[in-house]
Every structure is written in structure tokens, then in C-alpha cells.
Image (cartoon, rainbow, N blue to C red):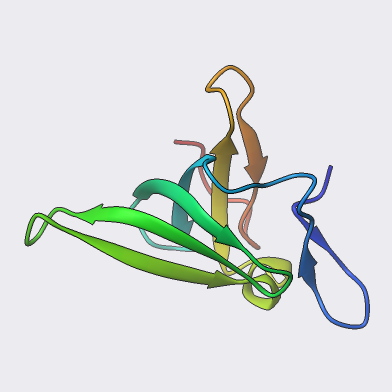
Length: 96
């Protein structure tokens, strides 16, 4: 199933990703992975709570549905760590 539903405006499918899901994201063509917990799902964006290892602080990060639809982000997410869902970046790079 697709993470983003393409309509006139790309939107996240709330039946696919939900608050409390564990998530790993990486910007296309980068090596930095961010691990976190989904804290909010809106049609146009998903907010993630993650630990910033540079300053050992927690931070919020937002990804936009439009960016996911055009392949800016490579995303793995799971609600139970048994089933890992995957949404590839535009270049289809990597599996972490």
C-alpha cells in the first residue's frame, strides 16, 4: 500500500501510518538516518519525535506529503516491529 495517496494534493493515508508508529527516515542521496516515533499525522504532514545525537536532545521533525510523493524521503515505519513498511526515495537507494 502507498504511504501517500496522490490526488490533486498529495496526502498521507492515516490507515497506513499512525501516531505511535516507529519510523526511520533518510533524505534521498544522504547517509544520515533519523529514527523516531510518529507523534502526529495530518493529511499534509507527519511529525516525528527523534533524538538528536549531536546534542543529546529530543527534537521534532516534520516531513511533508508532497516531498514524500516526489521521492525526497526514504522511509521505513512499523507499528509492531514485525511488519516493516517501506517507501523508497526517488532513486530507490538503499535498504537500511
